[in-house]
Amino acid sequence: MSTLPTDGTPTSFGGHADGNDVDVVGTSGSDSSDSVADPHDTKKPALPATTEYRRLSSSWCASSTNPAVVAVCKVWFLVATETTDCAAATLLFVRHREIDPDGTPGPWSEYEPAETQPTCTVTIDDIDHALTRDFATVHLAPPPLTVQPATPDVLINVPVIVHTTATPQTLTTTVLDTPVDIEATPTRYTWNFHDGPTRTTTTPGHPYPTSDIQHTYASPGPTTITLTTTWTVRFRVHGQTTWHDATGTATTTSPTHHLTVVTRTTHLVEDPLDP
Image (cartoon, rainbow, N blue to C red; front, side, top):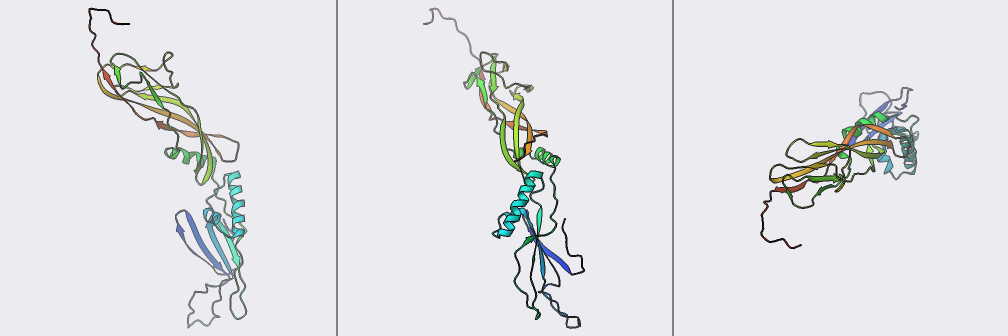
């Protein structure tokens, strides 16, 4: 992951984590300048550190105002996008300073990338697993549920027609800190008329007069109709051209349609009805 001094010089690390950011500082070349000398120690007093390593997340370095750090981040993000490397991996930076003969430390240099950077690789399988696990966070728009006749009351023993208009959807989201393009295609429709078993079709249905999905209510009273659409998903790392099929599927539920099933009684009349 990183290359640290191997010449026997002391190295220490400390730091803190804030949300997804990791801020770790390490020093080498001598003990920390904040150390307290032991009065019984006959060795030379500790000198300030001459080298400082800092491990920072890419999200931090993207917001840095240091031009050198920003330049490194841009390169890192480019590599991460093209190779699906983990853009959230912590990057290792290093800076140096000279110590005057009297022990006074000079100014720190600008941070530079350390010789070896982490290789936190996010694979296509990683993205697939995370995407399948978090489909609920993928904001697909549910298709509209259309019911005919379009009245609040429908007649008992008279077929009710249902259909929808569903088309593929595309969006860009972030998975494992990696920008990902998603294309979702509707493949299955589950109709729940709430008076018996659900019905599943592979077509969205058609309106009258070519309707092919109908339901007849046998009992009067208030009821609802709901539609759940199943989507197959494929994805690609943003900026790449190769698409990959997701293992899982996503679902959306359209707004519930409320209606009342009613009965109507026929009456004989003596005179003809007006045309």
